[in-house]
Length: 252
Image (cartoon, rainbow, N blue to C red; front, top):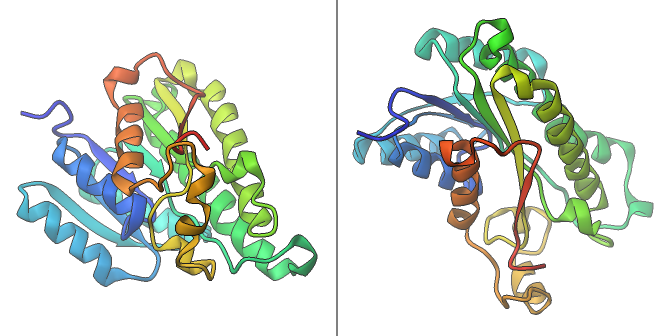
């Protein structure tokens, strides 16, 4: 029997990419997986089917994490179906077409921050309300999926996205300190150039090929390589780790 049997994990933005890889890996390690998606219900249902066919347990919940009412509805549904929450992966994130800061308008910046920052805050808040031993919970773990862009700046491409991920790093550190004595560990991963559909969202599907020479390991990463780091941070093997980050970036 898996170590995590009986535990429930919520992964936001889990219908594709890193989130989907996390969902499949978590299910294989015994978690009951709640797969959040914003618009692609078909893809989310496909991940659920894959998990169930492998003998795991999962269900999908549609919710735009940038909207507080939808976050509240999602967590109420988890309460009703699972009765507990043990782990959260704040993975949902968006970016927009590559451009310089002097080309960006407020609407674009607001969209990025609403999902990547506000959405992560809202989900973290609701998770803490359920996990905190101070509030009668059993403790738990949160992993925020940041980005090396938050350190490097993404000049000429996605400075707004990079800024949102730097804010997520601050959330990770502050929340880790707030909840360390309440049974909750909060950590982050910073993926580098990872082979997912997100690059196409920015208008350059071949971005990894263009930039891989800047990676000391000489290649882009795979979503599963990020997922393994996330699942380690959630596991009991990381029991003395909070407020920390793992860069999954090939040295970049």
